[in-house]
Image 1 (tube, rainbow, N blue to C red):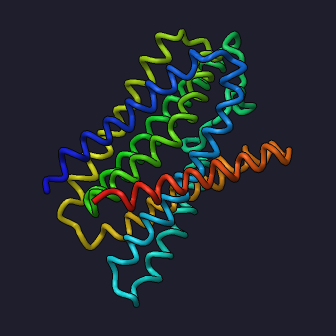
Image 2: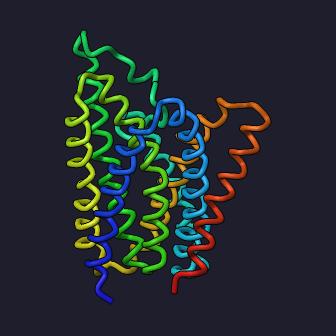
Length: 260
C-alpha cells in the first residue's frame, strides 16, 4: 500500500481539525467552555497514554529481536530527556488553559506580542514533530497511523484552545489568531513529508523512532497535562478525570481492535 497518500491526508487532517475545532470551541459561551476544557484535557491524557502503551511501544518491541528490546526502552528514556530539554528551551510546553501565568503579559508593553510569537513558534515546532510521529506510525502500520493521528488530534484541540486565547490576550485579532494558527498547522504536513522521505527506506530505524514517538506522548501526558488535572482535587472532579482518562484509553483500544 502506498503510504504517502494516507500520511499526507491524516497529517493535514490532524492540523486542520485541531485548529477548526479549537476555533469553533471559542464560540461556545465562556462558562460552558471553562467547564468543558478540563474534560477534554482528561480525555486527551488517556488517548495519549493509550496510543503510547497500547500502540507505539508494543509495535516497536515486536519489530526488534528480544535481545534488542532494551534499546527500545533506552530510546524511550532518551526521548523523555529530549522533550524535557525542548521544554527548557521553551518550544514544547503549551498551555491547556485559557489563562496561563507563563504567557500573561499585557500587549501594552510589547511583551504580549512577543509571547504570542513564541506561542506560534512553539506550536509550529510541536506540529512539525507531530507530523513526524504520524508518518512514522503509518510507515509501520496503517492502523497504528490512525491511532497516532487520533492521539495527536485529542491533545492538540485543548492546546489550540489555549493558544488561541493567548494570542487574543497578546493583542492579535480573532482573524489574525485563526489565520496564523491555520498556517502553523501546515507544519504537521511538512514534518510528515520529511519523515516519509527520510524513513521510507529505513525499516530498521522505524522501531526506535516509534519508541521516541511513544516518549513524546508519555511526556506530554505526564509532564504537561496531568499536573493541570491535579489542580482540581474535588472528589467528584477527580472521579470524572479518571473516567475520562479511561474513556480515552478505551477509545484507542476499541479503535485498534476495529481497524483491519
